[in-house]
Image (cartoon, rainbow, N blue to C red; front, side):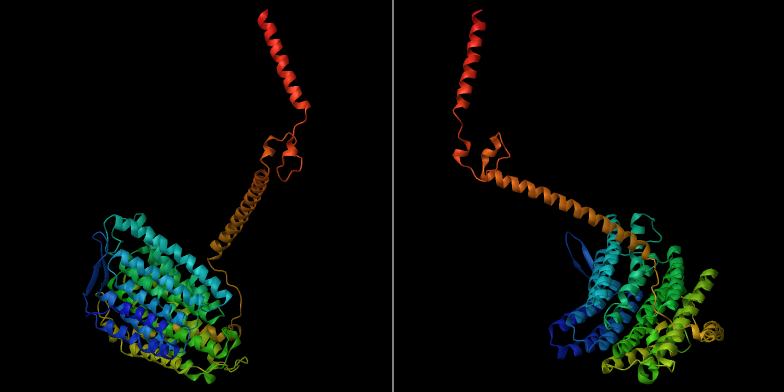
Length: 577
């Protein structure tokens, strides 16, 4: 019987939530093994569906080469991240992290739009709790902003899917060759929100840096890579996303150079590295699409490892800023080895997995005649080497000055095991690239990463980063500052609008409340003394009705009688005449 890896992870999360904490660590560390085994044994072409309502069939599992490779690496991520978080006693985080990974896998296996949007939205709902569970003011606010942005992107995507489905297109197809109508643009914008394409990119840095240390490992690789899969599947060949990917690669690298917070710096590089994948999806040759897929695969390994290493430093020292730590290679040697394994991977240094994946997309741009794209992606690669192996590696691990940072919490063994596994995989795929290349989903000419020209190309690029870093080393230490991002242009006007609308609505509420109070008070007074309606002297204070208050003097009826009598006499006299 074929098992759905995503459903297995969701069940693992539910089980981890229900069992005692003494058993939970084994569930988190070993449960995802079942998902990895299920993913490895998924035959290409497998389909599973069920009847929904009124003849609608939901194809919740369809396995092709593209879906399989993302399913497999997401399962591996869940396994390694589950081991890393096994010491965590927070059962809500255990549930949401595994359900989050399960929903990500479920998106990659969907064949129809309705199943796709269900798991896409579940991805956002489960992930926001990984931010909120950090349980501080900054995390609560960041989680709220994260949810607002994803509600916007999700609703745009949902609207586009409704339009597509209403036209009779139930299955997920490439929309690039169809009409560029409202549905096309709504779906494209909705996916670009999740891939963190500027100007809707600030949510990623905001939320990921404020997530829990273990939840951040899951988040670093799931949402954006699921969106990359979706762009490859639905918008391959779009020139818009090609240039959007180039912008992401440069934008993230530039902001990372200025950053001091470890996880914010790495979050900027999520945007940058995802840009390479998005650009490859836009170029859309077989080589470029394989490059985007391969780099997504490798990025999940080294980016999760970088977040693990940053989390290990923060966990042991309680410090998250780069300029407040130093000499950690002596205090945390295993973390330093794992960090440089990931740092060399993301920089594309030979014998590490980034070397065998990143250059496929870059060289695909040159092969497709996109010389400007090729040049800009190379420049972005220089920024990556400058900010992670050099800046983070030197100031956190290699410099002799330790800045007084002490080990206040010993590193749990499960975190060491998880980092070691990821570091080994980064090296394994770098040395034996065919382990990955044989599973790439698109046709392309044989690619040989260890060609002399390729190695020389990266040696020149890394030299371009190393020389200025060493020349200006005294000025390279980062400092804490606020870096304004694109969110300023919508957060500030939106905050002003919310403040003004709130003041207006509060004033209206206060005015209506006062008016209703006056009406209520008068109604109660009239209920107590209905004769006030007939009172000729309404300003008299009569709280209650009493007959003597309204007893009429004898002169009043006498005047009425005389008036009536006079009128009758006058009428009779006029009638006689």
